[in-house]
Length: 212
Image (cartoon, rainbow, N blue to C red):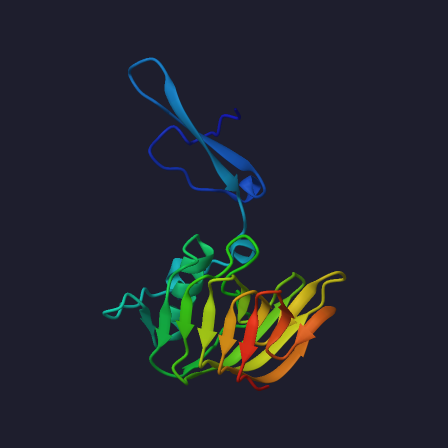
C-alpha cells in the first residue's frame, strides 16, 4: 500500500499527480486491525464528465422524483450527478436552455450508461458545442438498455477528431435504449459511426419519430 502524504486525517484532496492511480484508503483506530477500501482510478474532470461545483446548481424534484431542469447550471449538475455514479436519475426540462460553455461533457458514458428517463418536454437546448477525441460523443454519450430520452430538441455542433474514435451523434453517441420524438439541428463530424441523432444504435436500441 502506498502511503499518501497528508492523508492522515479525515479528508484528503486528490492531486494532479494522483490521476490514473487507484488509491487505497486505510482506516485505523486505537484497537488492533484496520479497514481498507480501494478507489476506482482517479480521473480528471473531463475524463469523468463532472463539472466544477461552482458551475452547477442542484435542481428541485417533482412529485414523481424527476429533477426539474431549467438552467445551464442545473443541466450541468444533472450531467455530473449521472456521470458520478447515478445513472438511473430522471429529469424533465422546464424551459429552453442556451448553453454558454465552450464544450459539453456528455451525459452517460461506457462506464456509467444512462438508464433513467430524460423528458425534454418539447424544449430546446441550444448553443450545444462538443469537441473531443474520445468515443461515444453526443449530448448523451451512452444510453443504456433501460434508458429513454424523449421530446428533446438540441441545436449545435459535435466535432470528434480522434484517430480511432467511434460513435458521434447529435443526441447520443451510442444507444441501446429508446430515443423518441427528438431532433438535432446543426453539424456532427467524426471518424467512424457518425449520425445526426445517434452514432451507433445497439441491437436493442429503438429510435423513433426523430428528425435532424
